[in-house]
Image (cartoon, rainbow, N blue to C red; front, side):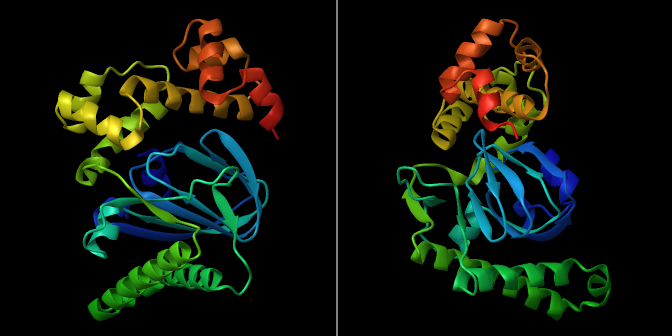
Length: 294
């Protein structure tokens, strides 16, 4: 996964079911378009950026908390220096801390609801987020890493998990997050990561489902059923969505023509690209560029 291996080294949430990082990044720094099989909470402590979530860029500033469910395509672009906190955790993390949890965590489905919220100053949620940010920085400090005893490492790890569970509990209590019942085999979600990110990294290639199933180590029949269950789309439909997400990024971040962008995502017919783009986003490519380019 490009995002994970580039920006977070070897500490991946699929190894320990949780990861916690606090970043200090510069104006115009960006994280590329990506998606993954685990949950993410992205909290802007200081600064302003555009966070693109399912093709729509949102301008966010101090105190904004984004919740990103599995397999949602997202990226961000700083407009100022930014200090943020990124928390990632897996479905097994939820299940290991709540026996019987077979539902997915999601945003409440209310008309017009944004995929982020601005956290009130001195609230329980803000205090938990800032405590996690402080703890994450302490854990990643190279000086501290060298001197930690095993007991200290375990104590910090348990504190991190306890704070994250308290945060999730508070967000559920405040109805900012909710559980939704899903008939899904969560144990194999991570095997889809490699396929999703390959498609995003190679948008001009047409990866057939037989090859995708082999890549993920799942049988063709089970891959088809798992993919539909997890994403709510057929494999072909979702491939088209990922390509259009890439096209959206090109529309916003380059001045390339519609024909050039169409070819860049492997579609030779500009008219077909325009129809597909409008079918998925509800607007034509140029209209999308004119509305969201900043």
